[in-house]
Image 1 (cartoon, rainbow, N blue to C red):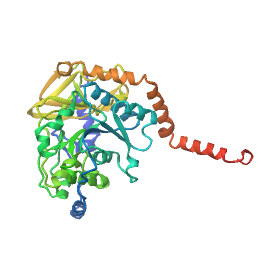
Image 2 (cartoon, rainbow, N blue to C red):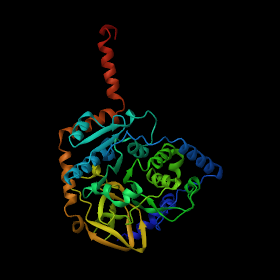
Image 3 (tube, one colour):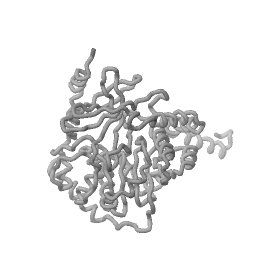
Image 4 (tube, one colour):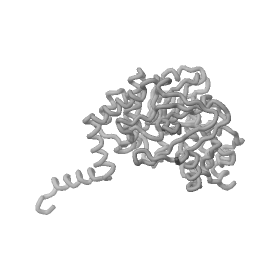
Length: 406
C-alpha cells in the first residue's frame, strides 16, 4: 500500500519551491527579499500616502450589510449557495455583490435582486486596472454600508452572522479578523516596510472580515494602497489577506483576531487518511461559524459528491501540517492535513445535515433556466471575448449601409 507519508516525501522532493514557501511548522516564507533601498522606498511611499488620506465622509455610508465579490461561473455559483443559505438561516442583512465588467448577466442580476442583493460593477466606480484580490478591500471601501461583514463567495455561514455586529470586542476595536494557519516568516521584508518589530503571529485569513469603516477609515485606506501596489506587496504577502493586518500594524492600531485556531473540514478514506478541503472558522465563543470551501468549490462539485464527513481541530501545541495534492475525479486538488495534537469529529455531530442543505441549493440552481442562460452568456461574452459586441457592431453597420456597398 502506498503510504500517506511516502506520498508527502515524494511530493516535497519534486516540489522544492513549494517546500520553501510553506513548512510543516506553519511558517510561510515568501522567498523574496527586498534590498534596504527598496524597503525604505516602499516605507516612504505608504507614509506619504497616509498623510493624504481625506477625512471620513460622514454622510456617505449608512447601516450594516454583507459584501461579497463574485463573478464568472465558479464564484457566482459559490455566491448563490452562500446567499441562499444566509437567507435560509434567517439573515436579513442587505447584501452587495461586486463584480467586474461583464462577469454577471442581466438575468443573474435580476435573480440576485430577488434575494435582497444589490449588484455593483467595479468599473462604475473606477477605470483603473485592479488585481482580482484588490477588489476585496475596494468593495469594502466603496460599499454603501458603514459597517461591513465581508464574505468570500465560497465562504458559507452555518448560522446567521448578524450578531457579530453587536459584540463588545467589535464595538471596542471597530474590526474583527480571523486567523490563518500559517505564520509570516520573521525574515519577511514586510516587517521593515511597515516599521514593526518581527513577531510570531498567525497570518490573517480574509475569507471573512468585519469592519466599521468610520472607526477604521485610515487603516482601510492604507490596506487599499497596499493592494493597489500589488506588484510589490504580493511578492511578499499572499494576495490581499494580510494587507489588512499589516495596515493596522503600520498605523499602530489595535485589532482583534479570533483566538480559536483554524480547523479543517473534509473526509477520511478507508485508511483513516484525512483530506482537509474547507477552512473552519469560529465565533468569539469557539463555536463554528464559517465553512470556507476554498479548495474544492461548489461549482466544481458534482450533485452526488459529499466532502464534509469530518472536522479536524487542533487541541495542543504538538502539531504538524501537510499540504500535498490528490486527484479527485481526475482533477488535481490541493488538500491539507494536520497531525499531532488534534481531534477528529464527525461532521454530522457538529453541524447535522448542513451539507445536504447546501447540495439541495446547488442541484436546484443547476436546473434553473436563468442559470443555464447565464452559462451560455459566459460562453459568448467571456470565453469568446468580444464576440457579441463585435457581432452587434457588424449588424449596426449593415443596417446603416446600403447592402450593395457593404
